[in-house]
Image (cartoon, rainbow, N blue to C red; front, side, top):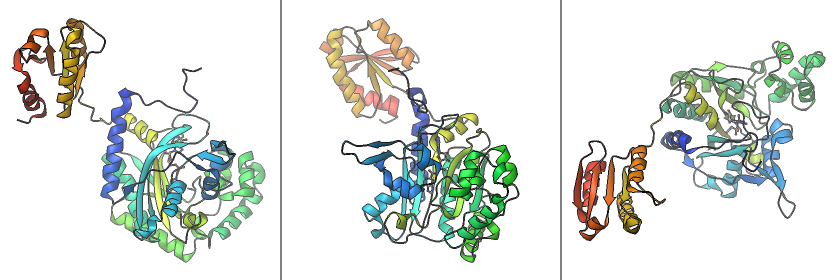
Length: 423
Ligand code: HAM
């Protein structure tokens, strides 16, 4: 079993890496254009951070965390998401002191011990952005726009934005009571999980995908009849902003998120091309998380997108990814005695920003030429004892087969001129 991947994990192979580079560069470019600065937090944190941050009754905390003890018996957990760690770092380094609104983005691996299926992994990657410090709905609109801009820049089409409000400390209790009243009579028709959710967190029933529960959920009260004035105003201004910037959305009063920290805005971006796991991005406002983790009241909003799901959508939509344009020069030798000189020449060419390969398997010249052909290099330099003595090198243009001898001093400007287009 030593040569097998653990369940729910993936290797990213050299043949796939261009797509990841392209994605990572696009994410950085777009989010920096929106004024977000990158933050990197550790892959694991104290377990308590997630229990407090995400919520004790959530599936993530109850069933999905990879938790372990360190040698001193302290409980640590591989991060299942990025928001709680970013808020922890925000507080620990007093980032809010620098500016009243902190705009941070991140990319990295997350870990959830879920049942693996298409689009659902145990180690997966997310990129996300968090705007910490503003209570205003305009920043919710900007967060949503930034997530959609990354998708647009990547060439994704046919995405749907689903929007909801989950209320706040003032109005949510009344809505939860209304939900409990509604489901009380119908509890027997719910699945076992929802029966438990009824006791612990009835809002989560709305997210159940089981057919028997969906039937019951259909007639439940709508959150929009329970929002307080502040939450209703917030939602209305947000939709006004989205309308104004031309972002279309579908209001879905049943959209509840799997994490407990949300207040007011909750949203998801879904791709119809994915199967059951169709959310490429999720986010919302979390006005109490900073206080929950020990800070002063600081409203915030953010999103995170699943990188693998974005890539799967790109593949389904046949989006062409700019590929690495490959090795440019192969330095071949006629005998092993020339290898040391080849190493030095190769390094000098690389210093000029040109990619170079050479042979390390003591192959014959013929076999080296075959490798160079396979690599599709435009130029091969051939180094033999005669050439070295005369401080020359043979350059073969692989496109037209023309060979010429060039003095070692002239080789760098020659390659720069022909490959980088510099004279
Ligand atoms: P989330 O909805 O749990 O939200 O995850 C965000 C995205 O991560 C999902 O929409 C999905 O694309 C991807 N994802 C989640 N679980 C998996 C999995 N097991 N396998 C593959 N992809 C997955 C959050 O994590 C929040 N921290 C988002 C947020 C940021 N809210 C405010 N700020």
